[in-house]
Image 1 (cartoon, rainbow, N blue to C red):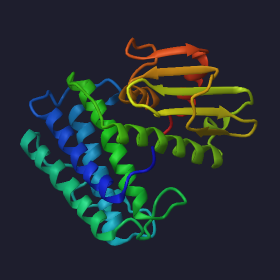
Image 2: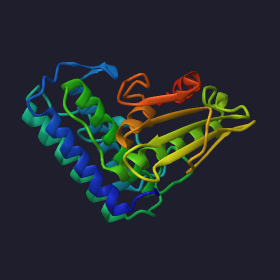
Image 3: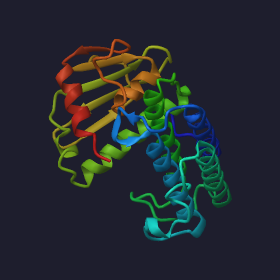
Image 4: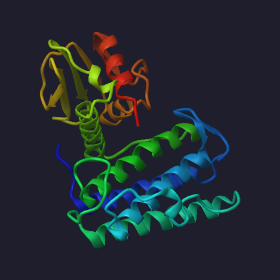
Length: 259
């Protein structure tokens, strides 16, 4: 379970966008998204497509500092409410961003909001941005959702890295994810080896792949583990099983909910 290749991330941005578009086709775009209640389904789609265009502009221009949103052409979405226009806008934005990422390769230096100033960061980030928001759309449209095992595993690991960076950067919520002697085990029941042990040290948390007894364990399919970890599925849902100190899992989810 390692990071994917740059080409695979580029492929996934397109695949996840196509899957999102399929969810939107025929759906009520005015419905509220349960996991993002400030947005309608259309607003969620515009957020995803806008993120694609913003990243595409950063990569295309090799920006060395953050690009203001008002400098990104078409970021606000298509005019009007025509679903076909929204669908075309999503497809065009993803394709243009992927073209920019492929042309740049993984190692071009660009601005990011982490210490890694490479285009590889954005290829990975947009893959998981799209995959997780596709889950939001599926929930709103009451459509089925599943994600490839490698992508689901990498979504979990990318988020672990983001939370660790937040902790190192002094985020007050992430800073509380410490305290010796406690641990959280994620165990996918459908993919051998897809297990993570998160250990709370005195100053910070660490994680590794391991099958060990923990303070609390979360068991379920890899897709469902990813959804719980990203707060798209409640840990009380019957699709997953929580063994041990459920309050510790809630503690983790509450303090890794920024962003």
